[in-house]
Length: 311
Image 1 (tube, rainbow, N blue to C red):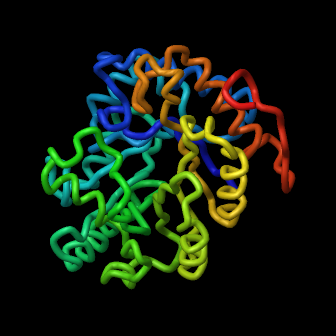
Image 2: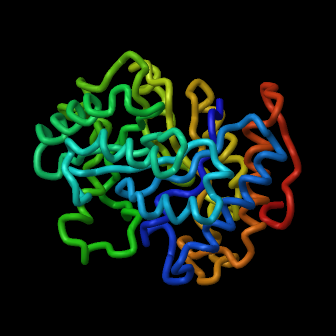
């Protein structure tokens, strides 16, 4: 089932929002407000979460609050990878979550927390145990990033690629399972009591989907964060893939992230571009909620697509 809709992913990160085209994030804020209004009209009871803020950045949350975004969401999402990328230490996790709560005035969901096995599986195992211990009781949701390593033939979601040096390659080692499905040391340490979920992105027609479902069921996982790509919605057979993915994920409480701009609808022809018209993203959000998280929840509901986003 869909337990919440998450609006965008790391908007304060150039790999997910081209802030050179929106230097004060005013378009992003307008997009969130418009999408929230459309979602409330479709299902007023569905929680809305501000997309995970990279590195728990309180200044970005203050900016969003000044634009009225906090009036439109029920919780804020934060991300943290202090062992790999962030300029703060792992022991700061509780303070970072509390600061986000104080700045936003909203509950805080940890939508991504992780540690790579880039240098050592033992480091990842330490990162898992230490992170979960620090976050216990501090947040309503913890989503470990991630279940699977990124396959080496796939690109990491970044604009910088190899110019990042080792930081780029750390993207490939964040799973508890290797890309071939074999477990790492940390896999056996993951809680089996349902208290911690995963953030696992599934690419278009991702062959790992059913393996992920089986592993998570076996280990009593309850919560999952994944996404529907607005950009992917224009691919042939997109709705069939979305239906298949969310049908497979129905046993879990899913925080469904909506993000990525279709190239032809952006100010720039890139999935990180702000859209030219924020209402088009709002229409996509309303369509996704109507189809996958309607106000009443029958086993299967089919609706026509709004606007011009999908036929």
